[in-house]
Length: 133
Image 1 (cartoon, rainbow, N blue to C red):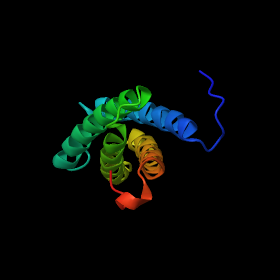
Image 2: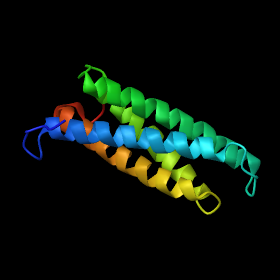
Image 3: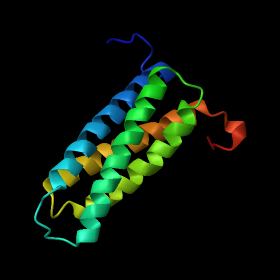
């Protein structure tokens, strides 16, 4: 799919954000699934939390991509929440990365998704609202 909008347009940012959400969901699902059944070199609780958060992050990313794709009036609010979940997931995956190689890639995808979701929110929410979605 090719969009002919100006490089810095809302349409282009939405397209970039949707792609980042889809990429993040894919990596989160892969990362979480790969950790299931791994020998527990690290604290069991950390690994369990990481698997659960990767799954939650994948879900919110997919939902965000869907809502942005159909230009739901609630997409901006969901993007704000998606950014928050992505940041939490990135932090936990960064902590787990020394023990699980995929966590590094997952954290990077989460950081990119969070950045683009924040950008989407900031460009969509009028400045008079104080920047909250």
